Amino acid sequence: MPELTRVFLDNGLKILLKEIHTSPLISSWVWYRVGSRDEPTGRTGISHWVEHMQFKGTPQFPATVLDKAIAREGGLWNAFTFIDWTTYFETMPASKIDLALRLEADRMTNSLFNPDEVESERTVIIAEREGSENEPLFQLAESMQHAAFRVHPYQHEVIGDMADLHTITRDDLYNHYRSYYIPNNAVLALAGDFDSAEMLERIAELFDSIPDGPLPPRLNRPEPERRGETRLTLEGPGETTYVQAAYPAPAASSPDFFPMAVLDSLLCGPSNLNMFGGGGISNKTSRIYHALVDTELAISIGGGSSATIDPFLYSFSLTVHPERDPNYALAALDAEIERIQTEPIAPAEVARAIKQARAMFAYGTENITNQAFWLGYAEMFADYNWFLTYLEKLADVTPEDVQRVAKQYLRPSRRIVGTYLPVGGEAVE
Image (cartoon, rainbow, N blue to C red; front, top):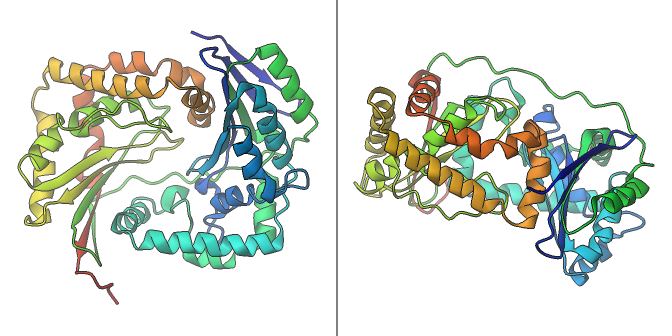
C-alpha cells in the first residue's frame, strides 16, 4: 500500500499526501469543517452559498478565467457542501497540479464576494431551491428531516430554507467565509503521481503564510431520543406514490456503523459511500427487493445512510406500484424488518451481503480522484485509519451483530414514516 505522509503546517493546516504512480494524474482536495450543521436559524443554506461564491473569483483568479484555465490544462474540478463539511477538488495532469494548488491557496483567503455577484447567485440558488421543491422526493425527504431532528442542526436541508435565502446578506456570507475558511479548520489531501517531499515543499510555499484564526465553535445540540412513531403525509402533483421510513442511525465513528452497513446490504443492497461511484452492485438479491419489487408492491426500493459526525438517519425509500396501496407496501417492509430481527440469519446470506458491500466499496476506491477523496473525507468524521480498516471491519461482522443492530436501531417507536400522495398533474393550492 502506498505510504501516507501526514504533516501539519505551522498555521494548523493538515496535509495528507499519498503517492500513486499508476497514471500521470494528481487529485487535490481541500476540506473545510463547515456544513449545514453549523448554521443557526436565519442563516440556513449559508455554507452552500459560500461554496458557490468561491467560484466567483479573486483578484488573482477572476471568475471569467477559472473554468477556462482548468479546462485548458485538461483538468476536472468541482465542489460539494454536505451537512458536516464543504470540499473543493481538482484532478489534473500531474504536470499541471500547481494551478490547482495556487487557486485553492488564493481562494482560502482572497475571495471577493462582490455584491453584484452575491445578488446574482441569490437568484441562482433560489431557482435551485424552487426546482427542488417541484420534486416529490425532495419534499418528502425535507419533511422527514424536519420531523426527525427537532433539536439537532441536522434538521434542515443543505440548500437552506427559502426565507433565509431571501434575507442572507453579503456581509453574512463574507463573515461565514472568514470564520470557517482558515487553515487550522481545513485539510488538504492529495493523491497521485508526485514526490511527497517536493509536493510538501510547494504546499508550504503557497499555504504556510495564510494566517490561522480562532477555531469556530460547532453547534452541539444532541437530539433527544424519540418516544413514539411519527407519520406524515404530503400531497402534490405527479402520478407516483412514495413511502419513506427513517430510523436513527449510528455515527460513522461508532462500531455499530459496520454491522449497519452489512444490514443495509442484506436488506436493500449495499450503499455506495464513494463520491464517484464504482461497483455497480445490483440490489435484486436483497430481501426488500424480493419482498416488494418481485411481488409488485413497489416499482423500486432503496435504502442506506451516510457517514456523519453525529447520529443521522437510516432510510428506506419505496416507489409504490401504481395499482397498490402504500400501506401494503409499508406492511411488507415492516414484515421483512421483523423477520430479520427475530428469525435466525443464515451465515451464508451475511457472507454474501458482506461480499457485496466490500466489492461496492473497493471498486469505487480504485481511481485517483476517489483515493484523494477518501484521504480528506474520512478526516471529517474520524480519521484516515477508518478508511484503511473499513474492509476488515466489514469482514468481522457476524449474523449476531446484524440482528443486534436491527433490533437496536430499526425500532418502530423511533422512526419517521412519510408518504407522498400524488393528486394528478396540477399543483396543490
